[in-house]
Length: 142
Image 1 (cartoon, helix red, strand yellow):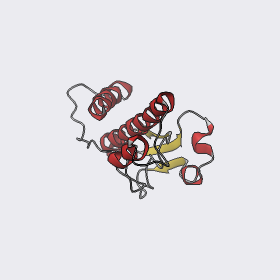
Image 2: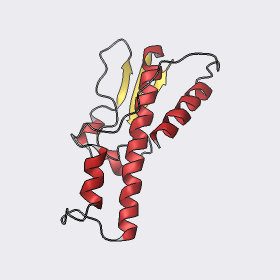
Image 3: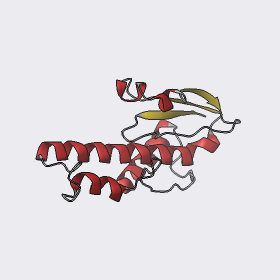
Image 4: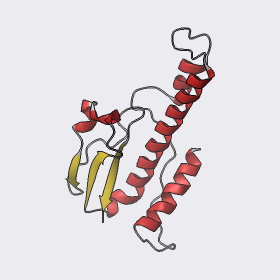
């Protein structure tokens, strides 16, 4: 899944920023979200291993919703990593904002404290994703 996100994000970058198909952009890494100290295995084990009685999801619909949340979080995180690795050094400034204006990140103080426009000459703040299911995004201005 993350390989697909990587490829799609890389293609979108070239299209959105109108880069020549021959233009070599920096390589990026494929990685899972881990800023909260948990691995993807930890998350899956927490919700899908029956040994974990307090967090195990028994209902099929709830399990599917949790899996959608986990894969969405991982996809958004990978997209942010690829965009940062490929665009940060080319940008003059960038903006961190909530992608969809829904309340998912509005109530998260750590997210809101990063929203705004930054110069690429400054030391960058922590970049999104800030928490699982984070929909903060970065727009790079070249």
